[in-house]
Every structure is written in structure tokens, then in C-alpha cells.
Image 1 (spheres, rainbow, N blue to C red):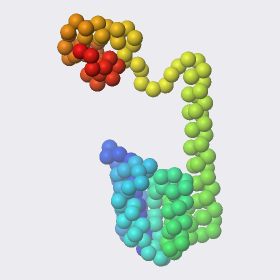
Image 2 (tube, rainbow, N blue to C red; image 1 turned 90 degrees about the horizontal axis):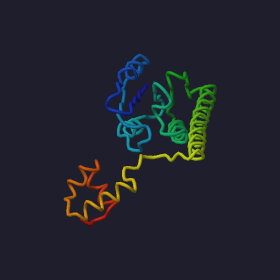
Image 3 (cartoon, one colour; image 1 turned 180 degrees about the vertical axis):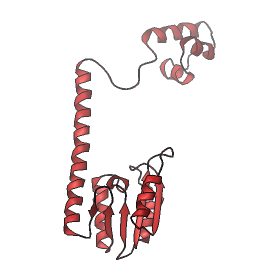
Image 4 (tube, helix red, strand yellow; image 1 turned 30 degrees about the horizontal axis):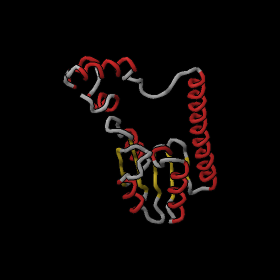
Amino acid sequence: MKIGYARVSTEDQNIDLQVDALTAANCEKVYTDKASGAKTDRPALAEMLNFARAGDTVVVYKLDRLGRSLAHLIEVVTGLGARGVGFQSITEGIDTSTPAGRLVFNIFGSIAEFERDLIRERTTAGLAAARARGRKGGRPVTMTPDKIHKARTLAAGNIPVVEICATLGISRATYYREVGSSK
């Protein structure tokens, strides 16, 4: 039996393309999840893995729909293989029931990991270059020393916190975090 698995990351995304491709690949049963690939709790994936029996084949539209990471993907596919369950990826043309399919699966997985590592390296290098130029990442600072001084001055004049926040364009949480509980 061919069993399909489809996943989209957010509610806004449409799963129809994947389901149509799985149906066209003769999947008799299709499980779907709407969850980030990084989430460990994907109910339909767990249900599909429990349902699959020896002789079945799990089919996905694309490799990244199944695993959170290369390690997770290899763990899932290896676990399926140990139970006598095959694996196919439509887009990449991978079929682990053949030696060539297993080779291609491992190569694609390695390339995907390499690509993620390159992205991570470029991001780290970009952040380091920005820091070297004096730029700091993160959210912009809302409470400058001038604003803190002004907030304390207003508070000393018995101005209500709500008015101080409105005047400075800050939230009450920011006021209390930066200025403290002084009125």
C-alpha cells in the first residue's frame, strides 16, 4: 500500500498541490499536517508512521516535507526501512526500495545539510561584519538616556505613568523596566 504524507508550515499555505501529487502517485491513504517542519509534535506524521506496515511505501511530495533536519529525515527513513517500509519522494525521484534510490537519498540529504550550513555561515559572517562596523543586531532601543531622564523628571513631578508613557511613546512595561517603580 502506498501511504502519502503532506505538510505545510502555516495555516495560510495550501496543501492541495501536495495532496494532488500524492493522489496521482496512487497513494491509497494520505496524512496531512499543518505545522512547522521544526516542530517535534506532528500528529499526522506520528499516526502515519504507526500505520505503515512491512511492504508499504511512504510517499512524500518533497524531502523537506517529512523531516525536521537531515538527521531526523535519515532517522525516519532508516526506521521505515528497518520495518520493511519503503520511501519515495516524488519531486526528487527517490525510491529507497532500490540501491540507486538509497544512494540518491543520502546524496540529497547531504546536499541539503551543506546548503543549510552555508546559509548559517553567511549569516554569521554578515552579523560579524555588521558588528565590526558598529551595528548592533536586535530590536531598536526605545528608551534612550534622554527619554529615561525625561521619564524620571515627569515622574518626580507626580505625572501619572499613563501620561508619561503617552508623552514618550512607550508602553507601561517599557517604563517600568527602564525607569522602575518610581512614580
